[in-house]
Structure formats: C-alpha cells, structure tokens
Figure 1: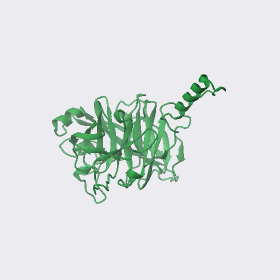
Figure 2: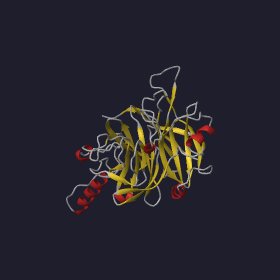
Figure 3: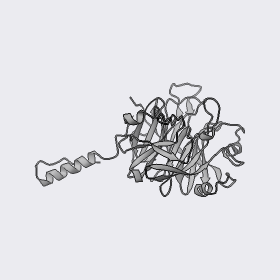
Amino acid sequence: MKILPVTSGSGPRGALCLGLFLVAARGPVAAEEPTLVAIPDALRAHVPLMELSGVAWAPALNRFLAVVDDSIDLDTASRRAPFVVAMDRLGHLDPEIVPIDGVEKLDDAESLAAGPDGTFFLLTSHSPSRHGKVRKSRRQLLQLKLEGRRLRATGNLDLLHGEYDVSHQLRKLGLPEETPVDLEGVAFHDGALFIGLKAPLLPDGTAIILRLESPSDVFASGRLLDSNTLSVWGQAKLGVPAQRGNPAQPVVFQGVADLLFAPDGALYLCANSPKGWPPDGGGALWRVAVPRGGALDAKLVRRFLDLKPEGIAIAPGSGALTVVFDRNSRDPLWMTWSLGPHTDAGAARRHGP
C-alpha cells in the first residue's frame, strides 16, 4: 500500500491524516518473512511443546486456531490432551487453550480447516508412532463446532477403517497393502474434503491428494467409508533441487504438509520431504493455478531453507495467506504471503532465529 506523506499542520486535517496513517501501520498483514510466534508465559507453563502443524481462521473469535503436534497439557497431566491454541492477527498466542469437548485423546494433530457454518475439520496423521503403533487417538478425522471459546466434536472418522479406506485407495495406485500413511493436510472446498498425504509418495515421487465426498453426511450417519465416498482426486510432482548438488540425486521430492483452496481460485500446498526419502533441506510453498484434479501442474512459489511450512490458512481480508512453521522443540514461526504478484517467487533463503 502506498502511504502519502502527512502534510504539515496541527489542525484537524493533520490529525486526521496522522490517525489514518497509524491505523494503516497497525494493519493485520505482517512482513512477508517468517518471524517468531509470541508465546505468553501462562501458556508455555502448561503446554511445553508448541509445534504448530495446522491453522485456520475463526471469525467468531477474531483469531486463528492452530493445532499442536504434541498436545501435552501439564495442568491435566495429559500427554494427548484434546485442545487447540488461538493466535491473533499479529502472531501472538492467547494465554488460554481452546478445549475440544467430546474427544478423549488427541495425538499427532496435523491439520485444521475451516468448514461451513462455524465448523472445522481436524486431521491427525494416522501414521505409526516412534514405537510403530497407530493408536486410535492418531486415527481421527474430526468434525468440530465452535461454541463460545470451546470446540465440540460432532463427528469422528477413522480413515484407516473399512473396506474402502485410505489403504484401499493406495492399493488401487499399485502400492503394497501394508504401506504406512502420514496424512498431514485437510481442506474444505466445493462441499468436499481434500486430504493431502505427506506419505507415501508414488515410486516416481508423486504426491497424492484424496477427496472425501459430502463429509457432513458421512459424519452424521457414522457409516464406514464406501466406494463412492473416498477417492484419489489429484497427484502432484513436488520436486526441488537437492541442496548439496548430488549428481546422483539432483531432485528431491516432497509430500503434502497442508493444502488450501484460496479466493484467487488456486490450490496452495505446503510441502516437505517425507521420512525415509532424501531430505529437501527445507520445505516449500506450491501453487496449482487450475485445480481440476488428476495430474496437477504445481508451480514452486517459495522455498524455505531449514524450515518446515506445516499449516496454511486465509488471512483476514482474503488478500494473503498465513503460514505456520513447525520447528520441533524450538518456538514456531509464522508469516503472511500476499496473493498478489511477487518478484522473488521461488527464492530460497535462510530464515528464522
């Protein structure tokens, strides 16, 4: 935004111009570089690990809601407490958590998407833990309703349960029956849910996106996934140059960490390399201009050295994206990214304290 200089004078006109300038300077869109999320001491005291893995805007709270990878709550002595956290437009977390009612445990939450009429969809990884177990608390796709400053679970699906589950879709693509999965992205668009897989990738490095039809009906009925409910919707080759210039491995491939259908009509993807695949040296933001399914033409928007973009949402006003970065035991980062043109698209820079 171009700011005109304030003319001299101490009269009403000068005061008005100065006031407008200060309002603009305090606007919600921050500089388009990753910066630290502010964590108040009261929150840090009972949530020791703040690994932000997904984010969605909640208009009723004038806040972003964000899922935490390890939802440890020292106040309740719970290692898998059901809650999310709230963040304002300037990247400051609230001191109080936002509890989730109707869910006993929440483990490895990876993505949060805004749905219709004040609802949200929360996805856990469905992946094996460090000990090789896939607990029930890790196998959840939740439909949530915001009620005041609490979320209430109105539906719960296990995407690895039933004859036509995620494993069935992977077998149709030629992958082995016992292939483990890592589901990390969920987005609501055009009446359906779109689920991005961090893993597995196809043998040639292609990432997979599934589509879940009429999710509200599926949640309401509580039925298992059937042959008309879940399907493979899109496939994207998210390849970036190897950072160390290995001639034998010039390109490394990424899986979907989160996804979002934006007001500009495009599909945006946060992506990182899956475990067991060659490391990418940092994640990336991708854009699919015409997201019609099938073979998706994804273009690299921005690469982040040494950083993992894990969650993406529409910022208030719909003119920019908000991205959060999980840094494991270090405090997370966040940034905004304008939906307008950028002269440095695809640039790879080193960021973060």
